[in-house]
Image (tube, rainbow, N blue to C red; front, side):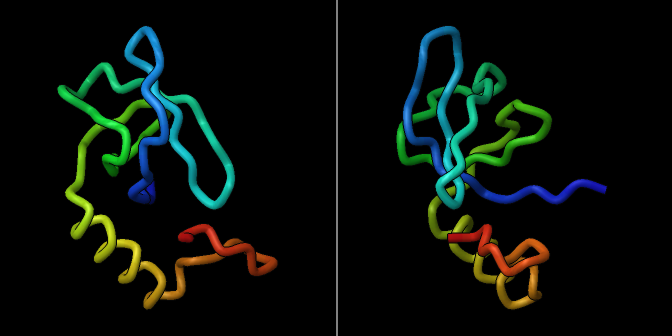
Length: 82
């Protein structure tokens, strides 16, 4: 089972790549499967590929639901949904 977390695009890079960041941790992901991705968009990532774009309100609602369900931290208390 996979858990997809909305994550914000921080920068668009050459070769259909983007930098995304969650809780201070940045990753490079491919945005080749999506059209017209922009800095500030929220996307769903799976195995290094952005699969879908979410509007900011839907992303905020999803993150709030995950917090309410107690899915906001790893063992040890690190908040992953900032």
